[in-house]
Image (cartoon, rainbow, N blue to C red; front, side, top):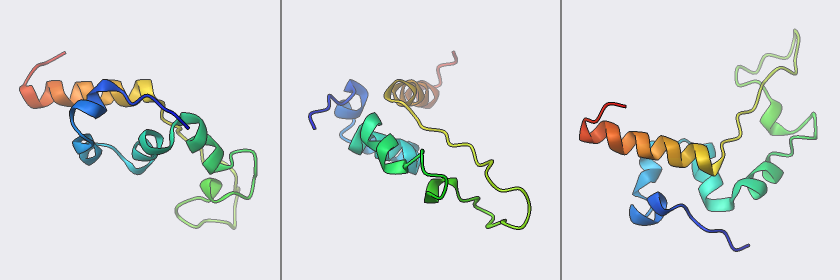
Length: 89
């Protein structure tokens, strides 16, 4: 796999990981397609569909997954940098 990292990630030498959640860090490390494949979204019994509360006695199956994209991560990091500088958009 040869993935081009966004410039904001290269520039900050992965220091940006402090402001990203686990899913976003995984997208940076694995790439968007590999991250989607790792979730096994087509399998109804995959761990990604388990409800965090552990609820399984009532309706089960509505645990929407947010799969971040590199574009979203770049937007988030750019806004974080702007906020740190005190710039308001």
